[in-house]
Amino acid sequence: MKTLVIGSGGREHALALALSRDPSVSEVHAAPGNPGIAECATLHDVDQMDGSAVADLAESLGADLVVIGPEAPLVAGVADDVRARGISCFGPSRLAAELEGSKAFAKDVMAVAGVPTAMAHVCSTATEIDAALDAFGPPYVVKDDGLAAGKGVVVTHDRAEAAAHAAQCERVVIEEYLDGPEVSLFAITDGSTVYPLQPAQDFKRIFDGDQGANTGGMGAYTPLPWAPEGLVAEVQERVLQPTVDEMARRGSLFAGLLYAGLALTSRGTRVVEFNARFGDPETQALMALLDSPLASLLKAAADGELDQVAPPRWKDGAAVAVVMASAGYPESSSKGDVIVGTETLAEEDDVDVIHAGTALRDRSLVTAGGRVLAVTAVGRDVADARAKAYEGISSVSFEGAQWRTDIAASVAKESLT
Ligand code: AMP
Ligand code: GLY
Image 1 (cartoon, rainbow, N blue to C red):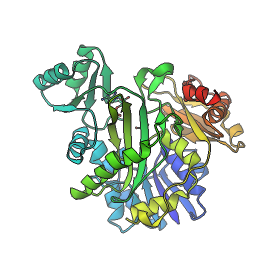
Image 2 (image 1 turned 30 degrees about the vertical axis):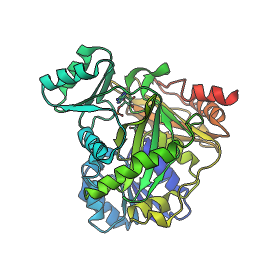
Image 3 (image 1 turned 45 degrees about the horizontal axis):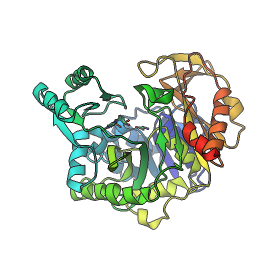
Image 4 (image 1 turned 135 degrees about the vertical axis):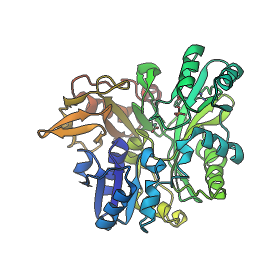
């Protein structure tokens, strides 16, 4: 099978690597890719937002499967352009990607499908905003309706800050605060059959102890030894299947990766958000533990034949991914800082360096974005995987590097006792 991965981040590197390790895959191509992806795929210089250029590339390569990684091309309808050429494409249509592209749309789907989520008001005027903030009280949760690369949400006790963020958004969703730990549960679906993946958790804040600004994600691990038994079955039955069925009922079949961001609150499991693509960096950890060949799962989902292949299987043990970000992230990022030490990790069996914002300059690897790379490790349990990931981190360096030291720490402690 010839495969083409669209995107240039850590998620796309993890997917390309998993495809390259699938014996049924003869070629992995990527566009635009990054220097890490170049080690397991052939790169093509194509704008990921240009649907006809992506479809042209897929056609010229004779690709059997195109996998679209990021939300922006999905929301722009790039998957539709690829499918219009008769090429299998893993990723929802423009209409279906609205589950991520518009929080108000997602709330509507959940309401109709009876999916448990935070109560919310969709507001466009200052009067509506004031009324909604008063109705819910602190802590205030204020979300920009549209795509904002993980930075559109403000959670605060400060009413003025909440009101100021709301005022900046054209349309804003103000909702009830959800307490309790968060879980990322992904599912591969063809629009009818739903195969959940193993639960994972990511760490969204920039600093240890969940302090500081929200980021795209600073680390992740899977599985979650503390997750209640039956969680996956419950979410499948109450969240994933009803959502996929409701999308089909509306005539916008959701085929691709449905990402349920969940809060396990004192009053039960609630959806915090949906995304229409693999999460980053949870995917780095999940792909490291996936035992099934990835290409056949994604191809079957793209072709509406997911029930013809077996559900995903997982290796024993655990995987941990720790992100290294560049100076200034998440407010800004630093480009051109020379990265050293990644070569030494290439020899390690259980450890991968997954590139996100990297570039080559005069044959040196340099930073080229906010999240630069993730060190992903597999171990016999979370503690073991975590130790290997941090050992990896300690051998990589660049000017101004920032990483959290507490990814999966509390869980690792528990697994030792
Ligand atoms: P979102 O973009 O919707 O995933 O929100 C980003 C982050 O903000 C989530 O991962 C949560 O940590 C936090 N968040 C979003 N909605 C809520 C909520 N209703 N209650 C508490 N925290 C939330
Ligand atoms: N891990 C958060 C995200 O991918 O949105």
